[in-house]
Length: 594
Image (tube, rainbow, N blue to C red; front, side):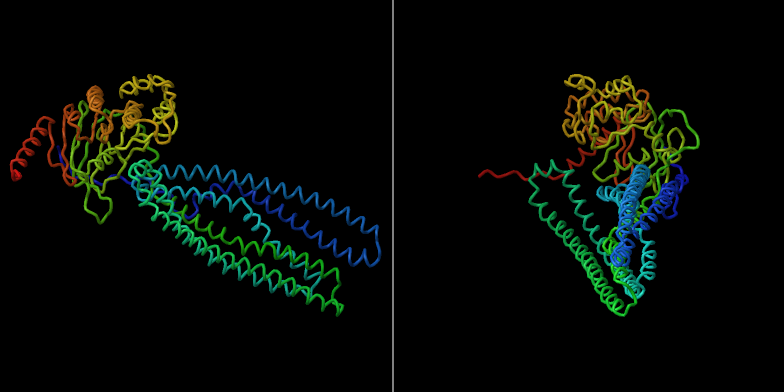
């Protein structure tokens, strides 16, 4: 085994780091739709002026002069305005639905692709509930940009229009509205700061609760078997209670500002009516002007009240955007190669391979160098925590080494995409997870467009075909959620067949016989021996049955190769070490007869 000093594997291309860079390409084509919505909002708000003007004319002209013909014309005009207003609002709703659909499809695809492109270590650094909540952030972004909040934002600029009209028809009370406008804006800012902080605390407690719930669901079999519900219930109740407490805290603060807004609305109406009454007595304005101004104040104060009450949505939107910005700024696995290479022969080489889970932690893999050639099975052994599974993931390219590099046929694996490596390296994890669907669906997942011949060949190589054809539905048999209705041995065999579907030159397997009986182990040993004739096969295993069929055995100890070489020599060495250890152990004292 040669030991070479090598340069650090090349970094993948850096992603875009500009804030909102993931959102701009989605919103850019939507600008015409947003302009259309704004134009429609302009006409809708102009139409809203018709009702106060109608009331003003009725009180100041029709009633005073008994002008029934004028009233008839005004009513006909208002009917036409209402019909036109309905058409405009429907058109605006359809435009917002189109915006919502495009954001959902395009940002949803970007988010899914981004999560799938993240390195495995990045995905492992956060609980599953965290990644699920990012998709809830997508819902928040969509609902804010294409929901009632967006309509509110489009209506807010026209508050100035209504205020200007009040100055024209009822100037004495317009100053009351102007003061109310300033007070509402101050209240909205205070509401935003308070509710945003409370919503952030609520989300943190929700993440803790959802993480516990996800773990509970994943471990449901263990929980039922060991009756762990009494242990989990206090944990759940504590986290649920914390979530409820934070939710109530956020709700209390939001309700306080909403109620203040309602009080200010009523107070503004009272102040306007009082000031208007004095102005009418002093003949500075008419009764119709006061009533029309009160109607206009509703159109003016309504959006401001919604702004106070809906500030939680704006706060949630900003927080969601910030989290998604952070996600899209994360580094990715390589997604494209500069040149396409032919199928490799399968020679694996590790040079000075070192790996740490944290920069300040001790190495889990410490300076390993090895060379694995096709034509045999290589087994990796070692005590728990010795780095076996980690080494397998490094060879597979799932983890990037802290130092050193991994090569396949002399080429650094860091230069290849995850899709290319998955095509060349089949992988069977220690815990085989299937996806809800049929057996055929699960076998063909690793090779889009796989034919029936491809599926049958992989199933036959893995020794699973004879079991599948014996089932009533054959390859159309559903496996259930995560393969729950399949036995552990059946899941393991299907996982092995799935790893072989693309005929990869390298096959890496982590404890492949963990769920198999002795007869199945013997069949797997024979299968691996046949596959290894023209493939590189590396397994992590302590099974005596599988070890008998290996060409080479490597024994890890604290991240280093303690023993390595031909299988027979290593097994003999280990047997001698075990015998010496047993001989050195003092015999237990004989038990005295009573």
